[in-house]
Image (cartoon, rainbow, N blue to C red; front, top):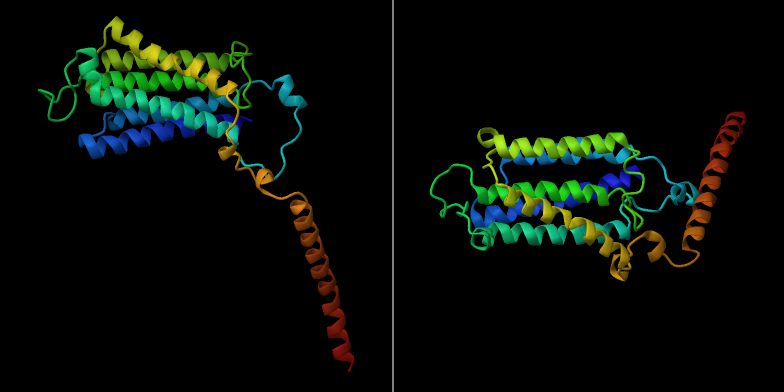
Length: 263
């Protein structure tokens, strides 16, 4: 479960970050996220997320669940639903901010060719800040991977998770407000902060909505859904017979050598 939680969170971040970087390079001739900002996101994604999601206590439902079969993939169709759903939402918001955020919010554009200087812009800082808070809230969604409705169950019992989440938020505040030289950020006012946190928090009701939506048939790619009834048993039988034949042949070889030496 811990591996699946981490994969669901990590693949969502990767999907969004890579798409933003590619779209920015093609249409804006630069990425809205700087290299050092992506390093901070990578730290959130790899180190902090793995520690936070791997330290959840097992729930009663997990203890009563039957063991997974060997053929079950790590990425289930339910996880795929959440990865795509959250990814589409994040990309829609971030790309809208990148291409029209300056016009919508009435702020100077940070896009190459439109900005007046190479100093950090409020425009691109909003994109970075919104992206980070989307991951902070989506990390809460990733605590449950079987469409459980209450993603907050037992959250305060995991003190490490709470501590890591608070540390991420505090560090993000200092990075944005005081990290202009290193992280390429421009300080934001209270209204802009509320906008970033609000857009990130939408991941929670969106996650609830995705839990209420049944898994589309097109995402049912697990081997047990594709295989015909009895196929798995037949293949196991073939494997066992092949193994037994090899064992018999292995015992026959010494016998054949002895007879040939006597003759």
